[in-house]
Amino acid sequence: SVTYNFCAGPAMLPQAVMQKAQSELLDWNGLGTSVMEISHRSKEFIALTEQAEIDLRELMSIPANYHVLFMHGGGRGQFSAVVNNFLGKQGKALYLVSGSWSQSAVEEAKKLTCDAQIDSINIAENTNGINQIVLPDLAKIDQDYRYLHYCPNETVDGIEIFDELDSPWPIIADMSSNIMSREIDVSKYAVIYAGAQKNIGPSGLSIVIVRDDMLELPSLPQSSIMDYGLGVKHGSMYNTPPTFAWYLAAEVFAWLKDSGGVVAMAKRNLKKAALLYDFIDSSDFYTSKVCQSNRSVMNVTFYLANEELNASFLKGATDANLVALKGHRSVGGMRASIYNAMPIEGVEALVEFMQDFAGKNQA
Ligand code: PLP
Image 1 (cartoon, protein in one colour):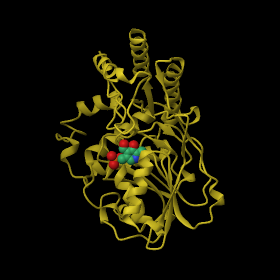
Image 2 (cartoon, rainbow, N blue to C red):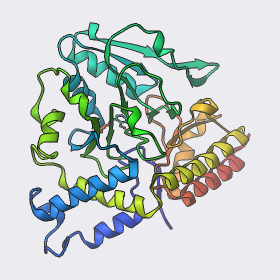
Image 3 (tube, rainbow, N blue to C red):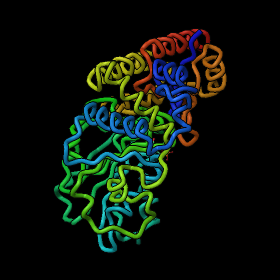
Image 4 (cartoon, rainbow, N blue to C red):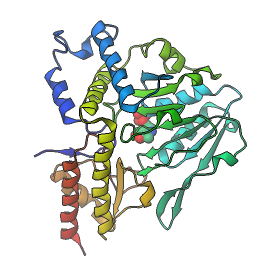
């Protein structure tokens, strides 16, 4: 029977995309060779990258004054790239901390600058074991920050911020785990970046959407391959890009368009998440530690009331072809990552298994 993979990343990719990739693995575009084995500067590959950008721009309604970069370095690569690209020796930045990835972004930023340049505010509050985001009144902060950095979806904690930030400074968002999961207004952001291995394609690629005026800011000395300005100038080909990951991302974009785009995905994603959270809420056997308004639509974290059953739950799930449900080691429990590629049938199968497991193990 079908295996449903709930891994947080690298994650499940759309089955139709994988089947197409398999069928043309050894002979892409009638060239008699795979896409992995051709020059990134060949006219066929350039055509692929141009179409990928057109499709991504259409999917996210990216305005014309934004550049799109296809880069190396994953999500963490961008933690350092944003610092180096936008902070000169004097510039300061503010980081909102909502969970483990935004915390890592702060640590990287502090490592690369003197600490005095990076301010951070913890916006995750834990009340009686329930995590909740409390956004500060940013307008009250009298500082001249070059940017505000935050992570709208914390992959590890299962916390998502749905409200738009009202920021006096340019907003940089790490959308690694929720890009294209729902509609957003790109014009509200100065920079959006995402590691590919959740909603875009395989690892090895990251996408950066950057407003053109941001490239005018004084920057710190940095490696050329992470320099956004150079990337723009060279069409994301200052050095050899991860071509296979780029190809698969292009196929995912085409699949998304065929599937009704981000609007249709968002509808489907909400349905999947509601199915799972409603079941968790209806059962004493499972609990969520995230308040209703910040429950991630992409990464559903939950706990068994009796944690001694964790190993048995994971084994039973794997035996039922529901794999990679173990929560991140830093928070324990379980996590079902249900990105765009996860069909509703996968979530239905998970709920059915959870129901069955609870029935068999209820005290
Ligand atoms: N940011 C977020 C929100 C993530 O979920 C991850 C990885 O899971 C990263 C950053 C780091 O990405 P990478 O491992 O590609 O550096």
